[in-house]
Amino acid sequence: MVQTARFARFPLGHFPTALEPMEQLTTHLRQSYTSVPELWIKRDDCTGLATGGNKTRKLEFLVGEAARQGADVLITQGATQSNHARQTAAAAARAGMECKLFLEKRQTRDEEYELSGNVLLDELLGAEIVDRVPAGTNMQEAMELLADELRAEGRRPYVIPGGGSNPLGAVGYVQCAQELEASPVPVDWVVHGTGSTGTQAGLVAGLRAMHSPAKVLGISVRQPEQAQIDAVFGLAERTAALIGAEGAVKREDVLVDDRWVGGGYGVPTDAMTEAVRLVAACEGILLDPVYSGKGFAGLIGNIADGRFAPDDNVVFLHTGGSAALFGYRSTFQTP
Image (tube, rainbow, N blue to C red; front, side, top):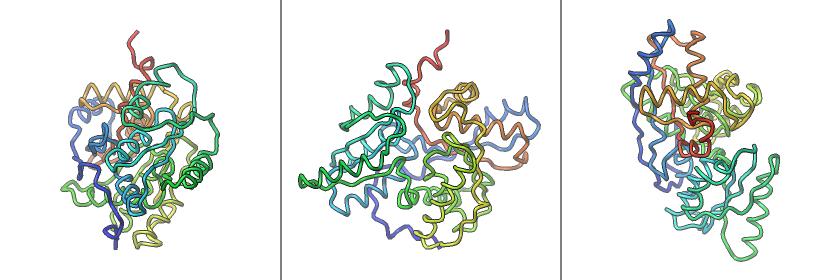
């Protein structure tokens, strides 16, 4: 039994998101590959909160809990072009709270990367960028230290982990799993870019709690396969327990493909660039350079490998993030 109604929830998004066929792209790929499934896209880029994205689902529950506790300021962290930071800033504005961000310099790029895209939106949405810290900084510790300082001033901070990826945040993707199960399309596979683990963990926990046969394939955008499996499985177990389905998730339920990470988190690859261009040209849909671009490159790679049957319904979960494209102009600009 899936138990989600008991959690506090602050409405932020437009749900359920659309599930659309990718007809032009499917036709295009069938010219090159012999086993191309029926391709669909779950439009979680259209959640409606400051250009949308997957973090909105998580933030409905996290901000709901923050409001229940009487918080007046949200603290979170992410990479420089963090989609999560941007959506948290927007959620704080909607909830009448302040937002304080720590941004981690996980790579060195140009001025547009440092100041444009999501960073520009963070500031427009009223967030304070407390610090831009070097890669490898203990971000959780930095947030907790700031929270202690704010409490000493009489404030009521609520700390949200990177990506909103804890069991409560992952409940947002339990709800997405429920949307997929309720759709008229019998879903065989869900494919998406997996990073901070909350999206994949919530999907796996939700689908297994409902005894769905659908498989979830995470295309890693940050770390090797076994490390990502360990992280997703651990969070999926805790999420399942939180929703009243303890023991529903097995380690073999967590599927990860790490062949598309390239040089690391947020580092462009040729396959990512080609996937972004292809989906834009065939479907008029903008992917992002960090998550969904690499995720879709992985989907195409698995089609090329023959992983899916021609009659499978494969859903690509679009996690949003197109605002980051403006921070990667040099990657996509035609010479």
